[in-house]
Length: 117
Image 1 (tube, rainbow, N blue to C red):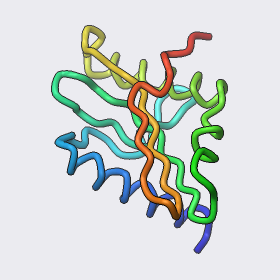
Image 2 (spheres, one colour):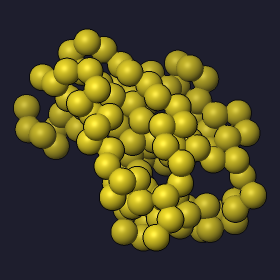
Image 3 (tube, rainbow, N blue to C red):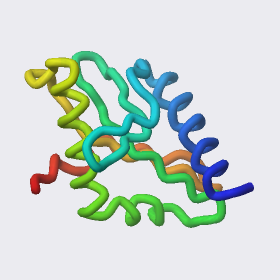
């Protein structure tokens, strides 16, 4: 399986996991500004911008470490574009990470705060 295919499969697994938790998909692979967001989910009144890290052969925690400050900054920029496009600037938001490994799913809501610059 290619890295791209593993990523797509991981995103599908993460989406199914989050939907089972009661969340609704607003967008998949959203591109805005200089960043991309794997999943944009509605969780009650909150918009969750979700980064998915699929590490089929990796150990728990490796995917989380891959969400670097630079990645966080790009996600923040893309989230801002998403919110501005929809005139949702007053909505509650958070940034989540879902890691998929051979050990299973690790879901971290509020994994980081919006990064400026």
